[in-house]
Length: 543
View 1 (cartoon, rainbow, N blue to C red):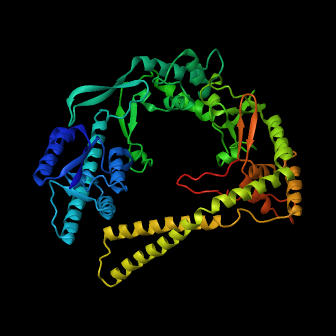
View 2 (view 1 turned 180 degrees about the horizontal axis):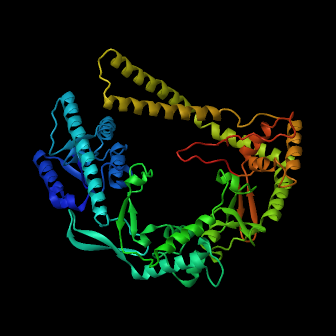
View 3 (view 1 turned 180 degrees about the vertical axis):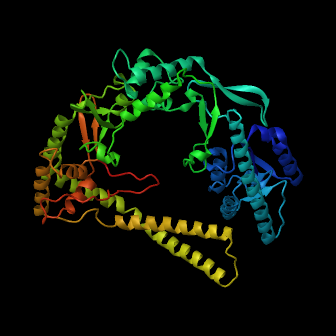
């Protein structure tokens, strides 16, 4: 039998305590030689948890090969079945998928009975025990880390800017415990940031963005990178610089903020000699916050935000003000975030640029002859896109019926007490239901493609839409200007020497076809963009 080995250790400490890669491989090679199996490939994974799927690329590659049509091996061999997954449901689901491809899972240290029913029971009992033990270990590790932080030690994440992680002479389970010490070069930059935040530069107050620009101009770096507004904000709001390093603020499993009572404050060497300076800076930052607003949408109501894209660096253009708010510009986010010299995209005066864009859309895009040409091209493209999907639709409809029958049979067996609705079966049923929903979604998409992506309309409908749209696009302040603009334009790309306005033929056709002649002062409804073909990464029709 052709077999593939999978070996994994989660930590260096685990490797030191008898579960090393070499030890696992030695036992597995002895087994393969004794049983006279052919080892065709070895997959090694270092420092990876069996609870975290997206951090095990070697494992994912192995599973992909096992499920492929190439069928390079007949079995996956592990030292312990927990090497595959600590989560018992995920492990059982994986083994079920592999079994359909006639790929076995073999544990050399946990041999399974020949009888399928007994083997199912044994592997699930072992899996549940492994999962329980791993979760208990996780709770123990977190508690140890909390106590470690309470006693002044650093748990190993990247230290805040201005500090370095230094090993002590106190032994830990793996190596030596660490503490935060001042990184003198970075600490000087931290002090300068607080000075600039409190007193400004040459008598001029500086916000976080301008502090970042000044530091970049002076050649200072944030650990090898240019300073950004986010870096400055991170420094100005970190209590570590007054000697209080706060950890366990978030729950690592769900990224939610923990109650303040669960935070752990570790005493570290302060960088700011004047503790009150930290709180003075917090007051300055708070005084600059916008007040009496309910959401970001009430702070900025601009015509073009979200449509403007920089043709140089690819970032969006956002609204910016100058001269204490007297002037408004659309500026590239790179220039706002790092500095004016970081991108050559021009800054655009808001009012003048909005009028220019609206005029171009009204005269060039909302053009009857152009729209008719779009429709002719779209019909041709639609006919080409639909034809290859007819056979696919028929096959999917058969798969849909088959999947429904499988689920129905399982429910009948549970109802007749032939199967017990345990956790593993529930997970299997959920998997079948998810597959059925995927099939039904694709069936719906393919059926949608059998129809034109827009309703047929005549000259009167088109003329009515053009008249209403051009009327609304005369002025940026028109209440319907934004709705009409976003109904036909998907992107406005700003380059140093030109502006490129992009839209979708399908979006235009849908918008015009749904236009209501009876309400000439109305606005177009939001419509979904028709897709000419469907893949795992859907793409819209050409602009």
